[in-house]
Image (tube, rainbow, N blue to C red):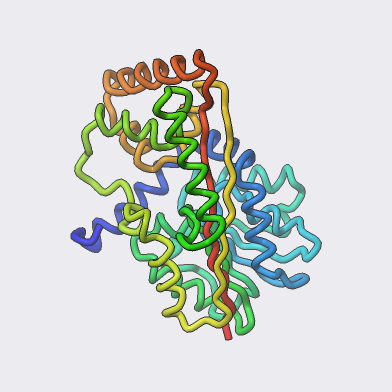
Length: 310
């Protein structure tokens, strides 16, 4: 997105948030299945203070904010998002969890937060930074609202650092995946649907991902660099990975067409004929793999960067 204008970037934020409205129910359902352990890790890294104030930037359907509001520390939580559909889901979930009185949900731009300077004891953001066309602005805003001694925790989707034990175990798992892919006994999300969509549905001419999101191998380095530029103390990194295996093609479709920004946006703009073509190929692939006793798998992970405002 480096060649786009300021107005294009503003429009991207609006369109990106709106792209979740139609899939908010699926997003909420799958987030509740796969994100809870990552949400709990985010909260642990935030070192919540009893009755303090927490801001969750890019709260989505509220899984991290709700877990935090219901934790023993019982902080007052503000959840920020730009998607009407996801905020509605978060409000419903907060009521059902009995924490609506401790959770305020606000529609706002993460690059211009409607919160006072130094008003939060912790600021967290899980899987949202890659959606911000100006991540440096969003991070500067997060620092602005953070009190001295407060914690900033960012989680992004990325593989583990290259030179760690987790990375070697991760690569060993990828070798096993490659063998199963070659023998037709594995499909991986979201790469599987993304590949079909790329072949069947041409780009609409507008950006589908931010610059940071597109450069997968450089994400972690870029994010760490931006956070170090904030001059925060105690910068720490960690990684946590999981996988979800499905045995139903419809579920596999719903998951990928919801969580993949690339596929979600192209399918939203596709013709009926294009969508039918994509779905037919997708179903054929799933049927073939499942008949061979194979698996439909979604690997998901968070690379965490935590720091303290001095």
